[in-house]
Length: 195
Ligand code: GDP
Image (cartoon, rainbow, N blue to C red):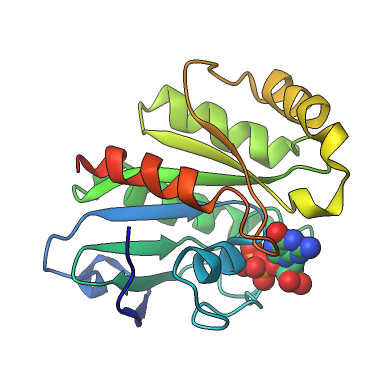
C-alpha cells in the first residue's frame, strides 16, 4: 500500500459524526499506551499525525484518519484505565460495542497487545468478545524492539495461549520504532478489505 495522503478527519463522539462516504474502516483496539497512535504513524510513514498521548478521560470518542481516498483508520479509545470509574467503563463498553457491531463499513479490527507482557484481563475479554461476535481480528503484538529477538516466539506463544488465540488467524509481531511488521500488516489489511 502506497500512502500518498493521510489526514485526521474527526474525533467522533457518536454515529452522527461518523463519515458518510462508505470507505472501508480498520479499527484499532488495545489498552491505553499499547502503541496505537505509534502504529498508525508508522503505517502511514508520518511522525506525528496520530497523537501519541491518548487522553484518559475521553472514553467516548473515535479518532478517524483517512488514508488516501481508500480507507479509514479508526482509533478506538484505549481500555483498561484503572482509574476510570465503573460507570465510565460501562459507557466505554456500550459505545465501542455498538460501533463494532453496527458499523457496516468496518472490515477488521487490529487488536494490539504488548509483546513484552502476558495479555491483561481486558485484552482477553476483548479478544474473546470479538471472536464470539465474529468480528474479523488481527492481533498485533507491539514494542517488539523492547525485547531480544530470541525471545519473540516465546512471548508470542504465551500471548496466544492466554488469549485463546485462533491459530488459523494472523498474528503480527510489530515495532513502530523499527518499522518491523509494517509490510506484513498492510498485506493482511488489504486482504481484509478485499483488495
Ligand atoms: P497509545 O496510547 O496506544 O496510542 O500509545 P502510543 O502510541 O502513544 O505509545 C505509548 C508509548 O509507547 C509512547 O511513548 C511510544 O513512543 C511508545 N511506543 C509505542 N510503540 C512502540 C514501539 O513499537 N517501540 C517502542 N520502543 N516504543 C513504542
